Length: 260
Image 1 (cartoon, rainbow, N blue to C red):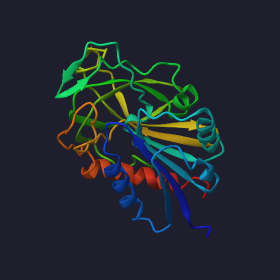
Image 2: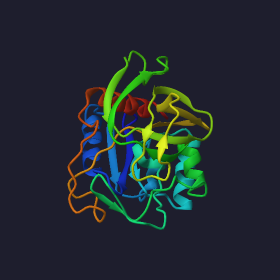
Image 3: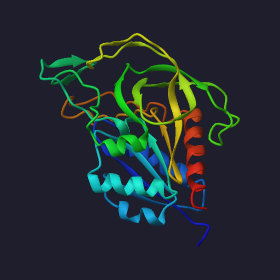
Image 4: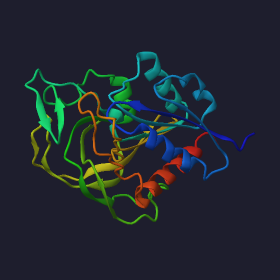
């Protein structure tokens, strides 16, 4: 039984194709016969983390309660590893109108950056707080640090996804980066005019464990934008891209090394 590597997966929230993400993650898990996975659509089931080496989060606008944040914090601090993807650090709050239509989506007002008082323990654990994103586009991903096991041997690549802008929290080791600027339709931020290297994958040490986070990974199914939009054009984002899947594959292998 010592060879079994248990990983808990949380996929849920708003405006994303969580079923697609869950399916792709489980397919990657199946490549390693040691992995046994448990899945949840919210932060239920965290009491089993003491049996796990890793935790994977793919959520949006779904923040843990105080006890749940404490459980994840203790898990990583005690030597577990967490891989967080895409909108995990995003809390959606709108201005008080007027209603805006952008890309066919009717929203009650502009989307605000995630406030500092939203789940601060969780945000500090993840290592960043969502601010805004540009419209989906081709992003050139640069290997910033090729010495880490997750990125060793990787080459620069391009991927079509939502370019995220976030506030960093704590000491981060950037593994992949990208530069971009431009308008942010539907967001208070209006337009991003600076273009420093923005982390597309980073690792953050936390106690005896660590967190791996990537803002990449947008996907949306036909009905996932309700009630803002009755039917949306399905978007699979980078979930069929071999480069993105390779990053996830390496991230999963990194999770399995915890508490080995």
